[in-house]
Image 1 (cartoon, rainbow, N blue to C red):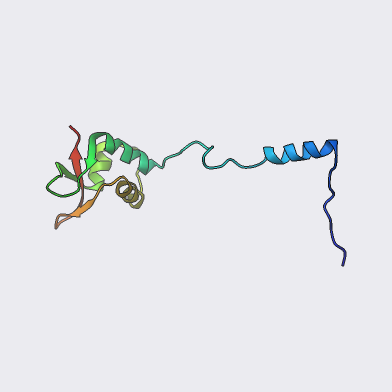
Image 2 (tube, one colour):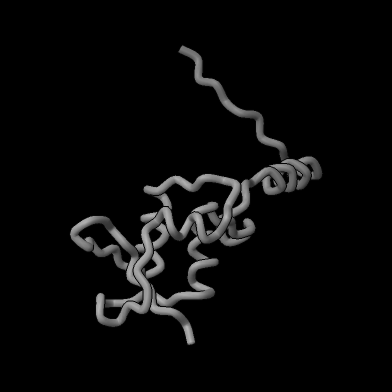
Length: 109
């Protein structure tokens, strides 16, 4: 069996080889621009008008996911499971009224 070796570049050409390798390295997450999903953008819109309410008593409004989507008049239909994750990540709580699930919202003053 013969052992394969990679030729080493020594001297002047080694500098070019090293520079070429560093230019092709991918960006780290810190260097790439931050992107948000459509659902996260919708939650950003909700946060401009409402704060998360911790309890039913604190909530000034209770709205379903469908009501929030309709309120934003979006042409794109968000995925409800992704909207749920984005809303809960932002601190909003879902509450069951006995008939449906609603988000507990506290209108900003």
